[in-house]
Amino acid sequence: MLIGYVRVSTADQNTIRQEVMMQELGVEEIYIDRASGKDTKRPELQKMLSYARRGDTVVVESISRFARNTRDLLELVDTLTKREVKFISKKENIDTSTAAGVFMLTVFGAIAQLERAYILDRQREGIEIAKKEGKFKGRKRIENSKFAEVYKEWKSGSITAVKAMTMLEMKSNTFYRRVAEHEKS
Image (cartoon, rainbow, N blue to C red; front, side, top):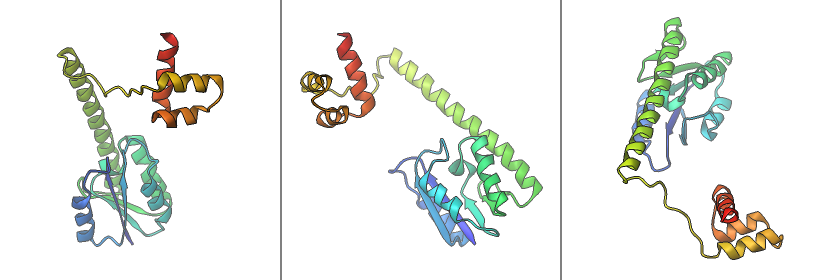
């Protein structure tokens, strides 16, 4: 059976191009994740890994859609190989049923990881330049006029931290950052 895996990094990105390719290849089962490829804790990836059986072939558009670093890529392919499942990446023309395919998988995996590191470096450099020019100020600060009042209730033990966060409409990291700032002032 041909099994397709499709991934885009965010929910608002489009999967159509990858899905059309899967249809053209005659893929019978397709798994689609809308999540970062930074790790392998993606729901549809995990479902696909559980579903794949001996003799199946997993097809991806490119290895960057499957994994973002060499270690994860090789571990995922090793998991498939142990189950006697082939792996094919169309863009790089990699087929793990051949020795050359396994070698190329390792090389392209390292290249994909390097490319990701370069992207992060360029992003960091761009933010630094924008900050120096006064164009980048980070995310807008979340403010809530009820913070001091809710803080007192939480500190006295009348409400839990979760209740305080809910009342202030803040996530835990923001709430505790504001608590630290409040206690310093």
